[in-house]
Each structure stands twice: as C-alpha cells, then as structure tokens.
Length: 322
Image (cartoon, rainbow, N blue to C red; front, side):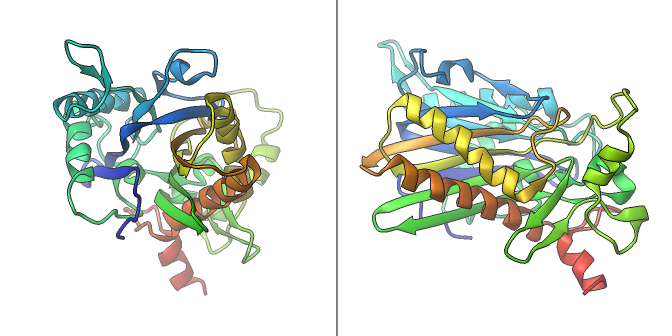
C-alpha cells in the first residue's frame, strides 16, 4: 500500500526463509516520543530515555523487530544509517540518532538461528527512503508473527504487520502494529473473533481465555514463547513529552479492544508514540483516533497475513469456514 505520511517514513526488511524481519519508523526532523509497556515480558531498547523526566527531546527512529532479545540488534543498523544521513542530535563531532526499539518472539517459526541484525535494520531504512509500497501481513516485524499461540502451534493462526491512518480535518493519526498475541483477535464491528485459537484444530475459533481459565491451578510457565504485540502511533499533533507518554498509555486501549486477553504476563505488549509537532489538537481528539488506528491496524495485520505451513491465516480459515 502507498503511504501518505508527511512527517514519518516507514520501511521494512523481510526474510521469508527464516520467517523474521523488522519494521522502522523514521522521523527525519525528530519527533517527541513516548512509550507505554503493559505486557509482562517485554524486550526493549533505549526506552528509559522516553520517560517524561528524562532529557530526550526528540526521537529519530523506532524499530519493531522479530527475533526476541536477539532482534534488538536491528537498531544498530538503523543508528548507522541515520548517522550517515546526518539525521540525529548534533554533538559537533557527529550526529547521534535517538533510536528506540522493541522486539517480539518469533523464534519457533522458520529458523531460530536467523534473527534481525544490524544489516537488516540498515536495509529497512533503505526501504523507508525508497519509493516502495508498505506491505502488510507477512512482512517486517510481522513476518513470523502468530496469534492464539496459547494452545500450541497446531491450534494457532498467522499474525502479521498492520497499518491504518485516520485523517480528521488537519489532524492525522496513524498506527503500525506487529500482531503476535497469545490471545485471540476480535473485530468488534463484526462482533466475532477473526483469528486466534482453533479448538482442536477444527473450525471453531476463539478459545484463548478458555485455555487460561482451564489451567488456573497450573503454576508452570507453560504459555511462554511466541508472544507480544508491538507498535507505534504517529501523529502531526503537538504535545509535551508527558502528554505523549500518556497517549502511549491510552493507545493500548486499541490493543485491549482487539486482543482477548491482552497484556498478559506472557506478552510484551509495547506501544510507542511519535508526535510531529505540526498542528495544535486536543489531547482527547488525538487519543480517540489513536485507539481506533491501533485497533484497525491489528485487524489489518491478521487479515493481510498468509498461511505458513500448518499455521493458517485468517483469510484461508474463512475460505474453508464461511
């Protein structure tokens, strides 16, 4: 899809053999950044700098990657690329790009020994500055994503990367989200689960919460692996850093409206926000659009995904089960 972002560039690098990749959001002129982590198992890079009390005025890049903790290395390539493009904080002897990141767990799909690295992060930046389309589904950070993994891979479905933009007057709010959840994906407009746990691998969908409840007396960490929804909201609105962090907090409502259950101990759900500081807008208007953009991006991520081996996509599932 063609993007109409004015203040941000989005790019991706994808390895379809290893089933992993990374997605970058670049703010050439810098953007006021914020973050909120609600999941219990996050993997993040340089996020303390985004706290309201700390001295980080602008962010120049956000990296979303697969590869679990290994995938955070993709940010190194983004830093290198942005320095070469003279994008960053001027410190006289060079520029220092302020780059934050988060990774999701996709090591059980494809090849576990191949993860996003500096070369992949660099390639994603090259893609961001090219004229190529932004692809949804099995691309970038969504390449190896799954949903409904709580009952095992045999009952899981394919996740992916999603993007959605909303224009309201001069106000623009968009979201890019890599959907890789323990739970099910719910479309509140259709009032049905569109991806998630398939009961016994058959045509019934949406049993993630049931699985958790049936194991209420099992203290073992039996759910870990294959989890985490990570994303970034972008807007042309202007807010101070404290408000941007609050906006990141509220952006998680979009996850909560689309993922059941959301923010579990076994997910590392993380949302970034970047504000381009071009127009004035009320906080409530931006937060309403941010929540909806995140929700819609999640739906598009799974609706655009393609099946991988036994892990069926939402699109293929509903061809078999109208």
